[in-house]
Image (cartoon, rainbow, N blue to C red; front, side, top):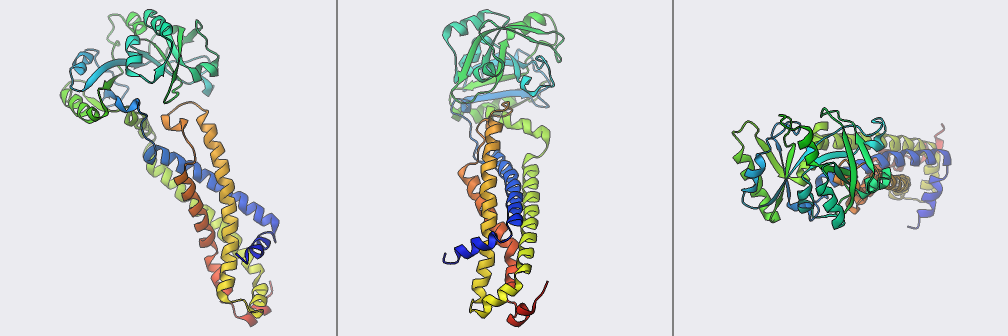
Length: 387
């Protein structure tokens, strides 16, 4: 610690280079921080909410785009451990201008009388629930979505059909909140689909959501359901709602490999940046190292001074990068709810600790070779050095 002031002065010797190096490290570690936070949220730290842990989703085994017969509902009710079964169908469609990302949100047809039984974390006044159940053209929206678009009770919402050959002309009958997760969804009465697709083969279930009696029943329900329909024309894939949400990432490829590849590339790049900076800094001070050796500084002390300078710059860049990454995570949380994890994305303590250790590693690793060479430099050769 007695050499800390000397380390700081050495860092400020070439202010422009130090500032640019810190900025480069901050930007790189900011990107790295967001990637690590996303990886942590998706695969390590993320856990289903209490109410979500009892929900199970049944979809077509091949893909969610393939429908399932509505009569599966009666068979699913007979599975041991199932408390309730709800049909829902993804409508898709276009709200206003599809080019505006603010207009993207889930539009789902659902059995209105089952929605609040299965999604027990949804909270809405009883009179609004009754209005939604009784109105075949009614819909309910999440409060976050209502605030973003200014939806109020009684408002009309027009959704242009793209998957289905008709448009939705809906009336807002309720605005709900969730104690666990604001999903930015619009749920409309499944009766709208039944009336529009009467006697049509397209009237089917996109997925079934089951409410298990307890979380312990979830694994057995998944096995039983898939075995039940294994040899049918529409085999199923049954999984917890949390796993179902993560399965959407598979459309993008192997997310784990992608995130780890980005992290590796960023780490390698920032290591090169820091190594180049320290190599130039040490080369400029070869004669100074000779003077320090003449004054009695030991080789180990010189080595620690140079490593300390590199580590100080790297940690400073890392701290700034973490702050920027935290801000980006906050911005992502305000965006569309693509996944539950994006609504809670943050630089958690394990990620913060990993970034701090990585910044320290980058600082030491990038300076170890020039620092070692400088500390071993012959005094006479160092004093004669000119550049």
